[in-house]
Image (cartoon, rainbow, N blue to C red):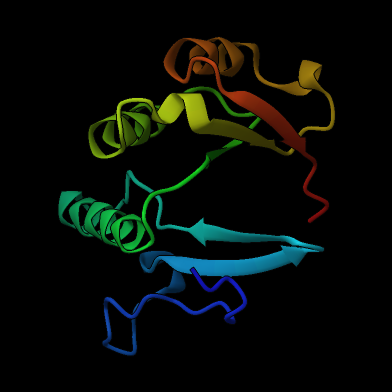
Length: 143
């Protein structure tokens, strides 16, 4: 794979009006000899309905297939929020779309928290139960 290319969105919508949130976008980074491709995908649980989720899932699957798989997946969650039906749906969709062992490669990124004790207790329990074995990263958003 050539990881030195500039980041480009996968042109799957091709209508000029597609939101960046509706596309799969690859960001290529280099850290010395290490080359990393981070793929930012549309979220699941789209408020516009099931048809958009199906499109998002297909775009994610197509992108991963073209690049031969993945090494890790990050689930980004507001650390101060409570578990929601949308979160449960999104993780359920990930389970049905990704390889069976995806949770072994998962990292949960809790945003809006600096310390683990700031994570919503109900959210922490939900994540431990539904995304078992995932590593956790805390990110305080300054904006």
